[in-house]
Structures are given as structure tokens and as C-alpha cells.
Image (cartoon, rainbow over all chains, first blue to last red; front, side, top):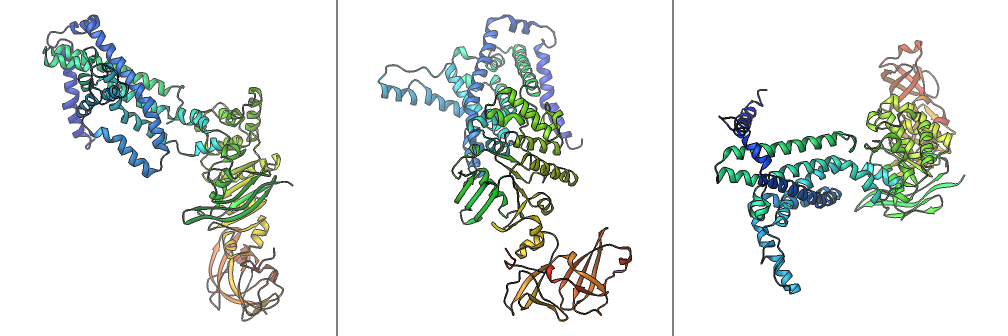
Length: 269
Length: 357
């Protein structure tokens, strides 16, 4: 108790109290009302932004899984030394500011960016592929940001499997493909679910990527919060949106925990 | 009986380090062969080579008359039991045992029947619907054994299967594995570093040391006629001494103790050779009056219940361990007591390849 006290004080002072204040504000502060929540529920703008958030998060997380799982699988098969080097490579983008990365994407995806210039030169096509300031740009940027989280979560669960089960299956007559689908993949599902959870939470609250790479139609909840805090100074609305985001993420967490605890994915500890 | 496994000069090297020197071995159908040796002796390497988990650097592996040196593990039709069970945690016991059968696309009814039969063989039909981690270590290993034999593989490899179990359970399972081997006429290649396990279970023991086969023999022969100092020292307690050869089959052990008619002694007169005498073959008498004995002094007495171990020291400074059945009247052995040792020529085992083949 004595040792966690400082951390506890910090958490309460810097995290719990502000959070409670946000909840308090969202319900109208000193003159309590449900006005802001009613607005979120009825006004089309808010519903659209909510849908945007969910859509972008789901697509990005799905893509991250499709790209990240093979990477994690490959890393797991490497000898420890080589794996460490490759893990550093995966981590590299992690060390770069997300702002810098997003600007880098404008150079790559832009109207006269690397890809469009190459396509124009190679195919002689007129105009360009719209890849920036739209949903495509947001999803690319977000997937790029989320990838390390997925890779490391899945890798951790693959590494706990050890080689014996695969060897056993192999000696019993299983091919590599069978071993993957019947042993490795089912056993890695807890890691996959954890990865999905982390990516969903982070992408739902993403702010910079949609702001820099998205268009007007790609606003997400966080962008709207920022808008209300800085531009309209409607802090109550901002608080209400933040509470909604928290609630959605919370429901999602509980849902995943349910699935993981249930029969569907076994009971590996 | 037909030959099940044949190894021809099989070798494994990792760069400069040789894990297994060229090795030949033949295992007959229905035989229970144990690879025995300390850790790092190459026994697991040899097992992995046969399983197909590692590729040999040289040599050939034949299974049931087929050269499988280049055949991948999943097409060698082997069964394997691992020390840590290697049961699939996300499948039930029944699914685990059914796994090798589903791979072979057997009809459903047959799979169900064979799984139940295998579970009955290991006396665990009632746990079919449970998950492996709900079972004890001994039960898990029995499930793993059921899984390894359910598809009638031509050879079952067991890699220290009882290493993770406590002593009592180990003995019970030794007995069960032995019984299964006899009932089903399975061919088993068993790896262990536990000499008792090797002695109780095997038809033949293949003793390994530093990547080489030291000796291959039935347990009795391995115990009574070890060929090398390593074999004599590894199995059981042994007294290894150097003796002078005096003539054909004749040796001198001490000033007042000489023996003739030592079996299998091929060394020429004048040579000094290592020989082994088991502690239970040595006779011990108080005092030093008798003819043709080795004079010694008791150094230590270790009472073990039914048997008593005595460490005695001869005038030449050689130490012998003597094992005697404990009798009430023997309670008088004490440190410092003068004693005389003797043993029969037939209990003297010449070492370093001097043993008869």
C-alpha cells in the first residue's frame, strides 16, 4: 500500500478527477440537463461522425490484422537474434511522431506524390488517383499507425505456444497448412482478440490522422471534440462526446472480454 | 522378426560440433529399445533424426524396409510421446486422440470407435470430454500415449515421457507402458536418463555417451557385463579397479589376493587393465586371518534399511563399496574395523572392450 500510494494520488488527481469533471460537464454542469446527449442522439451530424468513427476503426483494424498476423507469424519463426533485429524494424515507425508520419503520407499519396507521379509516368494517365484527404488516406495512415500494436500482441501469443505442439502434430502426420489452421491459429486467437481490442480503442479515439489525411467527410469523434473545445467553446458538448466515446469503447471491451472468456476461443490461460 | 528400424552410419553435426558420431542401430518389430545416457549424450538427437525433426548430416534411416532419410516427418507414420505431453490445449481429450485419425480422413464412426478403444487402453474413457488442463500430469501423459498409438504407427518414439512425473506415478506408468507394449506388440524407442527405467522396461538398452553408442545389450547383460568403464559406472554402483594380468584369465588384485579363470579377459600377461566388481558380489569378513583375501579397513557404514553399504579401503588405498543384506547380527560393522574382502573370478568384469561379444 505504501508503495502504490504516490501512483494512486497521481491517478486520482490527474486522471480520475478530470474525468469526473468531464462527466459532470457533459450533464450540463451547474444547471443539470440531458440537452447535449439529446443533441448527439438526434442531430444527423453527430450520427454521421459516430458512423465514420466506427467504419474507419473497423476497416483499419481489419486491415491491420490481415497485414500484421503474417508479419507476427514470420517473426515468430525467426531465430531469436534475427527476430530482435526485425522487431526493431517493426518498431521503427513507432519512434517517429505521428505528425511526421502523417505528413510523410501526404508526400506519398498526394496529387503529385510519389505514387501518382509514378503512375502518370508509367501509364501515361491523365489526372491522378484520389488517395489523400479522403477515407482511403485515413485508413492507410491509421493502419500504418496500428500495425506495431497488432504485430506485437499477436507475436506475444504465438511465442507462448512453443515448438512442441507443432512437432507433435507434424509427427502425427499434419502438413504445415493443417498445423497452422488447426493448432497455431486457434491457439493464437486470444492474442488476435487482444490486438483487435487495442487497435479498436486506439483508432476510435484517433485524432491527428483523420485531421491531416482525411477530408471533410471523414471527421471522427475526437475531431469533433477538438472542434467544440477550440472553436465553439462548447465544453459541455465536447464533454458529452468524450463520454460517448468512452462508453462505446467500454462496451466494445466488455464484448471482447465476453468472447475471449467463452467457449468460442478455448480457455487458454 | 522383421526389422523395423535400421540406421546406417547416421551422423549429425552442427558446424564443428558433432552431436552424433556415425551410428548404426537395428530395431526389430515389437522390440522395446531404450536410448540411455546423460544429458548431451546424443540420445535426443538420435530420436529427432528418426522422427524427422532434424535432418542427418550423413547416413541413412530405414523404416520398415523403406529409406526415409529424405521423407518429411509427417509422412514417416510414427507416433511420438513428449516429456511435456504436447496435448493440444484447445481440444478436448477425445479431439486430441482423434487428431491423427482425422488427419487420415477416417470415417467418423471408425474414429469414434478407435478413440474410445485407445482411451480404454489407458484406463481413461471417462475423461473424453474434458480439456487436457483439467487432468493431472499422469493422466495427461496417458492421453498422449493413447494419441500416439491410436493410428497404429509402425514405431512409437518416447522422449523422456515420465521425466515430469513424481516417482510413484512414474513407476505406475512404467508398468502400464510395458504392458501396452506387450499387449499391442508395439515397437518402441524410448529415451531416458533414468537407468532404473531403462533396466525395468527395455528388451535392449543402447547406452550413449558423448554422441556415441557405448554399448547395446539387453538389461541383464548391460548390468552384469558392461563393456566399458563408462557403462560400468553409469548403470548401478560399481567398483572399478586396475589389476595386473598374470596369465590367461589370471589377475592379481592385492598382495594376498589373486584370481584365475576370469571370463572374457583377453589382455596379455603383464598388462594392467580396468575391471569391475559389483558391490553385491563382494564378500566381507571381520578380521584378516583367511587365505587369499584382500585386507581392508571399514571407512564408512551406510545403513539403507534392507541393505547396508560399506565403504572399505584396502592397504593399497583402493576404495570399494560393498553392499550387504542387513542382518541383525551385522549391526556391529564400524568405521576402523579391519576386514577382509574376497570375490569370485566369475564376478570380475574386464572393461574397455575386453568383454566377450
